[in-house]
Every structure is written in structure tokens, then in C-alpha cells.
Amino acid sequence: MILRSKKEITKFQILVEIAAHQPDVMQKEIADKIGITPQAVSEYIKDLVSDGLLYSDGRVRYRVTKKGIEWVLERAQELKKYARFVMEDIVSHVSVATAIARERFKKGQKVSLWMENGLLFAGSKGDVTGTTISDAAVGEDVGVTDLKGMISFSPVNITICKVPRVEKGGSRNVDYEMLKKHVENKPYIAAIGVEALISLRKINIQPGILFGAKESVVEAAFHGLSSLVVSVDEEVPSLLNRLESEGLNYEVVDLGK
Image 1 (cartoon, rainbow, N blue to C red):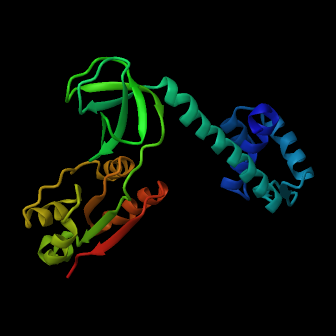
Image 2 (cartoon, rainbow, N blue to C red):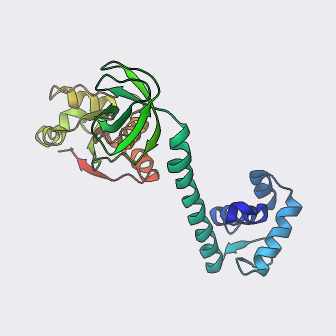
Image 3 (spheres, rainbow, N blue to C red):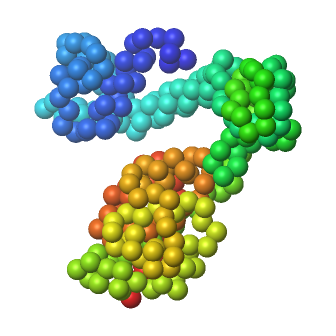
């Protein structure tokens, strides 16, 4: 396994850094990034070229070879499996999850956990089980440890409704019938831009999120909540980049007339 050898770890780090910045790669920058000397980086690079994992044109320009990419992917899979083992088999036994008690509990009682409207609840249903660390009354916060199982989420849908900026009519140039249709059954509604806020107010909807909407929508998705984001058009590209960076699915609807 890669973690058993410091040399293997360093080779992995160097290949990843070169893949991210190829072909023009500064050995000193790699050295600073991973905490070794430039001389050590140079020696590692010679070995990587010799092993066929790296290609050099002789002018300090490097590319990771197909063999090198396959080597990195194999080690990345090892790290992913190890991370899953740590999260599921180690951390879950020593960490404490905070849930809202749906029943009265005694310390040391076996309970089940589930997500509901983005919040974690403890009761007698659910696929995830654990043990309470204290007494708790109904509605109180309760700590649960020795977690077993994975909490399931319903599919998350993120809808982005794009409204024109004020120079192009703003809220006066919005298809409100379409907006009403997309607002239905969305538990989490955010607005980005004054034009978006006014558009929602015109259909008597007050968004729950006005500031930090991009991060908030991502957090909501990780808690199983679907979202509607009404955004002024110029802010949409950065929002999409943020969602894509987290691998979240979305749809974009243009509300402009």
C-alpha cells in the first residue's frame, strides 16, 4: 500500500503536482509544496522518467505518461479505500453525531438515525444505528456514538432560475408563471442579486438565503435538501463552477422574456 512507503507517497505527490501544472513545472515550487528539497525533487524526477512514469523533453518540461497516469490512479484508489475505512470503521466509532431526539432516551440506549429536512434525528426508525452518550428529552439535542451504517438521502435537485440584470429589464422582464412553477416543492430557496430578490417578492416568496447563497446551497445539498436559486444572470457562471467543483447536478432555467 502507498502509505507504507514514504518514497511511494513522495512519488505520488510529485506526479500529481506535475499533472496539475504540466508541461512547465518548476522543481522548486514542487519542493515547497510537498516539503522536500529541490535536489530531492530532481532525483525523484530522474527515477520517474527512468521508470516510464514521466516524460521529459530535456528542457525542464515534463508530462505524465499514460503509464504514469495509471500508476497515479491505482494509488489514488488505494487512498480512497483507506479514507473510506477511516471514515466508516474508525471515525464513526469514536466520533459523536448530534441529533434531535424524537423520543425520550437514557444514556447508553440503542437508537436509529435519519435525515429529515436537512437535520439529523434520533428515534426508533432509520438504517443507521448508534448509542446515546446521555439522557435526553423529546426535542433535545442528543449525542450518538458507535455509529453503524450510512445515512441515505433522497436525490437532490438544484434548479437555477436566471433573471436579467437591471440594464436588461431586471424583475420587469421575468416570466413569472415559469418562476411559480419552479418554486413549487422546493424547501430551500436562495436569491443572488437584488433583481432575483425582487422577482421572488413579486410572487410573494421571501427567500431563506440572501447572502452566501453559493456555499449555502452546497451545504444544503450535502444534507439532502433540494434548492431553488434565483440569480441575476451575471452571477450564474460562478455558481455553476461552484456546483461542478462539488460534483452536484443542476438545471438552469432562463426566466427572461
